[in-house]
Image (spheres, one colour):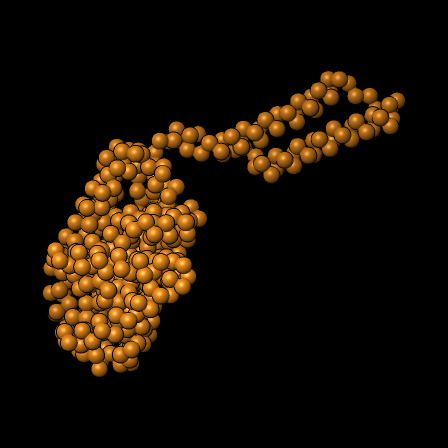
Length: 388
């Protein structure tokens, strides 16, 4: 094994010191110390060999993949949380498509269960170069992507998963949000991480607005503000933490995409009730990749992005539909499922609307053009809702 540069440098210093000592002694005691030319040349030759070794190690380390003959292969380490499920189907489909087209030149390695990065720190890990890409939820770090927060304004989006996905995709490609990702995080938006609308499950029966009072509920972002106005007590725990929080009674209800995420995290095992009909929007999760990783990707794979987005989104919808078929019978057998009144949901929407303009004004005051992004998002909601 090659010696480390640190130990090699010490060896050089030691040998140089020894040579310098010889020279000093020779100048002081010429009659006592006689150094042959052969001995001197041997000492300097040894030093030269060590220096050459240091240079060789440096070159090997700087070459990286080229030294292994793997210069053309691009590998993305991609972080997600939780197990494979409908939520992760999109990046799994993208992996299939890009790896097949890459013919060995591209590999996307998905690290489930936050094995590569904690879910709240995925953007940080991308920026630091620890991973190439990840699922990122705006609500896990709202101040990290302030303009993208528009997608988490409560009830701004609809109660339709397909409409919401189209809106999110359009908004994330707005130049202002593209710039936000690039300048703050050296990152690029790839495609939506499809989410169903949020419903609620847990150990408190919530059949109307009055029964929200005092309920400790797992929810994030401005949605928490809306629920607070009706007496709920919001708290933010990550998806993987929700099972334990419900089991221990530290929270009463969990808001999750219906139905697949509840089943994937097994929340029905520790719940007595489910509430349907709140259909809360205002949650955005995204596939994000570092710009460095994207720039290294072969051009023939880059140009596939629109096709990959479309097919990955379609695969996600199919997975959520399959989840409904699988999980609904299980939930109906296990729990009491109650229907939330439409009139009560309408009251929640009314309370939420002023929060949109308040948010935009705050962004504007910081020079972030929140009003422009809010108006654009409203236009996309109207556009895609008309096609539902």
